[in-house]
Image 1 (tube, rainbow over the protein chains, first blue to last red):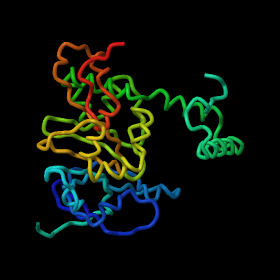
Image 2 (image 1 turned 90 degrees about the vertical axis):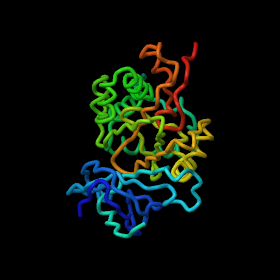
Image 3 (image 1 turned 45 degrees about the vertical axis):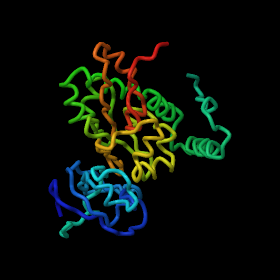
Image 4 (image 1 turned 60 degrees about the vertical axis):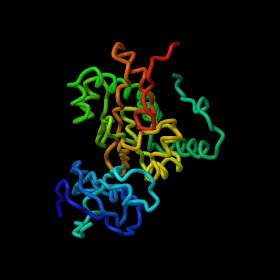
Length: 96
Length: 206
């Protein structure tokens, strides 16, 4: 699964235990791929002494703040970007 | 610096955490996992880095449009151009504040920070309060730092969750056209490199 810039994605709601770099507040949330940052050894395996290979694509993913927090009081045009590994993303085909 | 580095000059040395760190360090040395010179090298590495590096990058970008392009497209290359050693496995990305957009950096998972350039992060950056609140109420957090972007300026939070370390390129304050690059660098505060504030608007005397 490879994503293009602009593609809508959902962060997997997985409760995978152990060391992960996907923060809980983004799980299940919908955003868009802003850009591909590069490929890096998988930190979820590096953390336990493994090689982390093969490297995993890392994306900069954008979200609207109002899509993340029910109580968000700032403007609609406030955004949050996070760096999310490809295996935490799935295509979002729903409409808004 | 003496042969035996001292932990006593920094605060909190009597806390249980400080005692635990000293015990772990002693064990690592005793078991040969680390050597004393390696510990010293590591301390020297961190002490050689400070927000002054970030201020130099920002001031150069303010006076040199070509350098600014490099800084925004390849942060490590820009740091190398100014004689810094940006080597670190993580990427170093600089995001630009504009009249329409203000950036704020946080690491909710731990305290990722561009240490290879800026040294150790401020204590507040590592606090649970900042890490949890910066993502969900960034405007309130900035207001508490004494800075409130207007409602028509987009606030963009960057959560450095993985292999990127972020720094903000703040806007050059108005009325600073006559300042030299060195004077401009003195305007750049550590907080403004995280986006929690903006640069000073005039050079401090003394």
